[in-house]
Amino acid sequence: MTTMSELTHFDESGASRMVDVGSKEITRRRAIAQGVVTMEASTLDLIRDKGHAKGDVLEVARLAGIMATKQTQNLIPLCHSIGLDSAKIDFEFLDETRLSIKAEVSNHGRTGVEMEAMTAVTVAALTVYDMCKAKDRWMSIGSVELLAKSGGKSGDVTRPADA
Image (cartoon, rainbow, N blue to C red; front, side):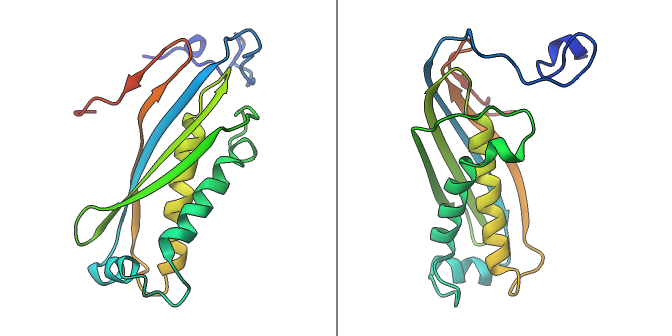
C-alpha cells in the first residue's frame, strides 16, 4: 500500500506541492508513450488512404500531439515548466480496426518528460476522434501507457511485457 509520504506531490501534512527539482542533476531525459484508437474498419481505411475531406488525419493529429507536449504544464497542475529538445509522434496500423499512436519526447533537464509524452499521445488520439467522429461516433481511445523512460536518478526503465 502506498503511503502519503511516498507520493512526491504531497508534503508531510498532505498538502499539494510542486516537487522541488532545483538540486537535481541535469541529464538527458527521454520518455516513450503509446495509446490505441479503435474504430470501424472503414474509418481506418479512410485515414490510411488519406481520403478524409478534412485532410490528412494523421498529420493533423501529429501536429496536435506535438503542440500538446508544450502545453502539458498548463494541463496538469503540478507539472514543471520545461524546455523540450524534441517531440516525435508515429502511427502504426495494428490491424483493420486499431491505430497505435506512439510519442517520444526528450530534453536535458532536472525532471522527466513522461507526462509530456503521455499528453502527446492522448491529444493526438483525441484529434483522430474529433476529425472522424461524424463518420464513427463509437471510436474508443485506450491503453495510454508509458513504455520507457531514461535519465535522472532512476535511470532507464522499460515497461515489462506482462504489465
